[in-house]
Image 1 (tube, rainbow, N blue to C red):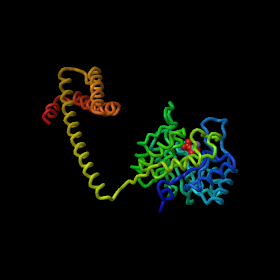
Image 2: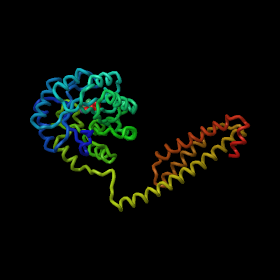
Image 3: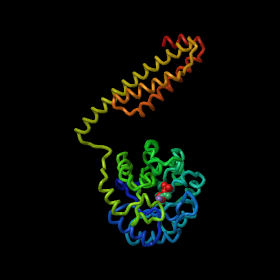
Image 4: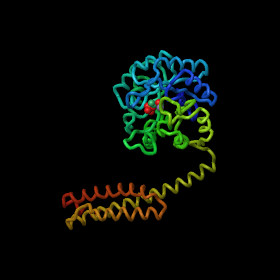
Length: 362
Ligand code: PEP
Ligand code: MN
C-alpha cells in the first residue's frame, strides 16, 4: 500500500489553526492550492486548554471544507476528538483525520475512536501526546492499526513543560527519532507551528525536521495571522509559507555517487576505529575504578566522596573547553561514567570476601 503521506517529500499540510469564517477558509485554501499543498487542514472543534476562548465553529465549518474540496480539488483534514466528531467528519467526506495531542494521551478515547473507524478506509495522523511519553504515542498508533487503519502518520508537535522557554512545546527531537527507529514504516510529519509557537521560529524548525529526514510538514496558515481567532502568533500567510518552502534546503537520505560513497565509507571507518578506542579506554577506566573500590573497602572508606566528584566536574569541564567540546556534553557524559563507576564499586564493596580474590585476578 502506498501511503498518501509518502506520495512525495515533503508532504505538505497547511491551513488555518481554526476555521473561522467561510471567507477565511476559502481564501486560505485558494492561495494554498497555488503553492501547491497536499492536504488542507482546519480545526473545527478546538481543544482549548482553558474555558472561555473560541472553541471552534463546529459542523457548519465542515460545509466550508466541502466547498474547499469542490472548488480547489484539495484534500481536507480535521481534528477529531470523539466519536461524534468522527461521525460528522465522515458524513462530510473529509479525506484524512487527525488526532490531537490532548486526545493521544487518553487510551479510552483513542480506543473508542479507533473502534468507530473499524471497516472505514481513511488515513489518520496521530499527534504526539502533550507529555513526553513515547509509549503513549506508540500505543495510539497501535490501537488504530489493530482497528484496521492502514495509512497512519505520526505528527511531532513537541511536548508541554511548566516553564515556557524558547519553544511553546519542547521539541525533544530524540522522541520522534526513537519512534522512527521502532516504527520505521510510519511516516513522520513535523508541526513546527505548535512546537515554535512563534512564526519567527518556523523556518529553522522546518529545516531541522527536513535534515532529520521527516516525511512532511504541517504548518498553520491564515490570510491575516494577527487577526486569527486562535494561535495568532504562530500562523503565517500562504505567501510567507511559500517563501519558507523556497528557503528550505532538501537533502537526500542516500546517494549512489561513487565519490560520495568512497569518502563517507572512509570517514565512517575512522569513526568506527575511534569508537572502538573510546570503548577500550572506558573499559580500562572501569577496571581501575573497580580496584579503587576494593582499596576503599580495605581502608573502610565510603564509595562516594564529594570533593573528588567536584574535582572531576571541574577538571573535565575545563579540559572539554580546551578541546573545543561543550562542557554540558562532557558533564552529562561524566555523570553517566561516574554513576557506572559508583555502581561497580558498590558491588565490589558489598560482595562476600571470598569473591574478591577472583575479581582481582580477573
Ligand atoms: C492544532 O493542530 O490546531 C492543534 C490543536 O494541535 P495540538 O493537538 O498539537 O495542540
Ligand atoms: Mn493551532
